[in-house]
Length: 365
Image (cartoon, rainbow, N blue to C red):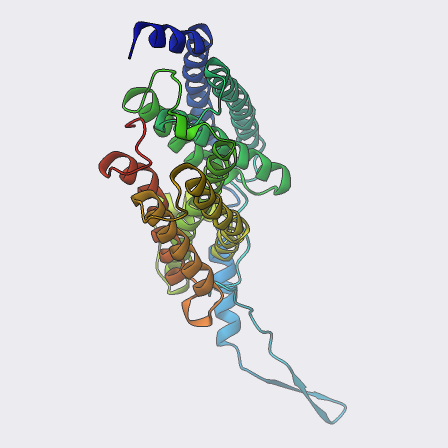
């Protein structure tokens, strides 16, 4: 590269804004850390007085199951048959139990810590969004040209999805602690291993499809992540409910934490809904990538590693959605498929970009 080209490239990158972006990202990590401790305080100091609703509900269900199927009463010499009450099972096959009271356990002190945690999460989200915006302004392009930029944008969108869900659904704060934990890990990986200095892109990426294709991929990944967290928690809660139903005695940690979560059926339904809602957008993401490939490389599909794993991810989620709607594959089997599908998405991003070379490998990491 000639000295004139280097000078032109440096002029195209605003180093001051790039420095501001880095400062804001580190500041967001600090606020996320405070939110992390606030979420922990919510779980630790929240009241345990309401814990035990799952055990009580399952005990009541067991008593009903052991009761006679039909009760005969005499009313004026006429026999009256009373219909037995039917306990309805969810789509996941879980028992009919109520949702837990939440991380704070229905207690004022725990709820206060939870509100502080959410407030800090909002503040951290705004600071991180400012860092992503400053990164974009420093190079005058979309802030997802390499894995570092993708990571900081992805974590911002994931937190944004969580905050929107808080506005739409009251009992969703259980997602806060695992979300902030993984966001901190994601940002830590971004600023250490994956950090890339603010720079311009290769000519093939200068397209409006960069804004369309990659932005939808980031959003889909964020929603898939939320679904994966709910699925993991569902597996734990379902095992907890099964142990109680079989007469077992879970440990103190399980009673304290898992009984505050929504019922297994609610977690399973939530995971299914978010995955099903975003699946059409993931389909569009793959189609948009194929159109962009046709413009940039003269072919719509060439089985590049990124294209291949995007399609594998699509197939995995399609299998999950089909299994979730099939009677014999509801519950834990479908949940395992959901986690496999999300694992495919993770490998599509990290594994393919780091370990496999292809046409999408523009800037290393």
